[in-house]
Amino acid sequence: MGEYIGEILVASNITELKKHQQIIQQQEKMAMLGQMASGIVHEIRNPLTTIKGFSQLIKPLAREAKLKEYVTLIEQEANEVNKVVTDFLTFARPHTPVLKQVSLNKLVLDMKMVIESQAFLDGIELKFLLSTDEPRVMVDEQQIKQVLLNIVKNAIEAMEDTASPKLVISTGIKYQENQVFLSISDNGPGMSEETSRKIGTPFYTTKDKGTGLGLSICYQMIKEHQGRIQVTSESGEGTTFIILLPYWNQGNEELYQAI
Image 1 (cartoon, rainbow, N blue to C red):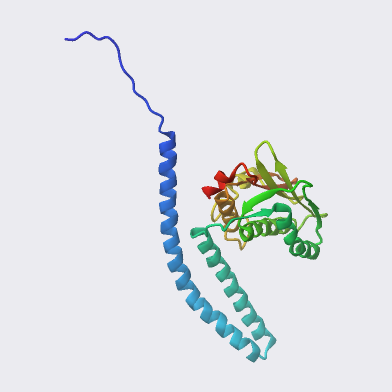
Image 2 (image 1 turned 90 degrees about the vertical axis):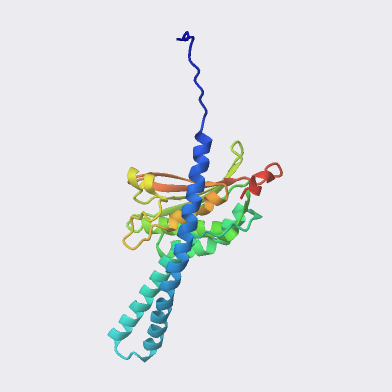
């Protein structure tokens, strides 16, 4: 028998390999989900169009108030179903962002009138605290506006029973992190630790009629912009959503090539 002189142990770090495999698996899942979504949406929208079309034809012919009420309800519910399938399709088959350099302040100001009207109708005190520096980003304007409006809408709904509702929208630059931020803060009831942890998870919702896809789509859009969303919330203390995006300057053009 040979003499035992020791052992050789060979090890390798496969963390990055595992991450890469998970990304590929997720992409394959999303591709399959996208194909399924297209078929499902097509099959739902065909009869939905018929239902909505006939309800619109019946409405002017209805003489009884109760019948008009029923027809209006049919139309509203058809619109609600259409919104659900549209959200599902958007989530399953996201569009590639069309990027251009814009001022984050201008983007917010473009939406100011819409947000002000919503806040006014609900008796909400609204403040805009925009950075005196000019936060510039390379984004798809429509997608970021959609994210902003979605989060604002959720904040307004959350403050429905708040005595003195307040909403603060602010922008700024984190120079050390090379990021800009867009913050939406409310003084509503806040969220439990469990809800905060699950927020943004597909199909998770605390609303009676929610689909749980609105915030998921927001998270997905911001991720496609190489950004992220932070949420801080305490029960009874309100909630703050912070959208973080790469700060555009002449030194980080390469970062956007991967988007």
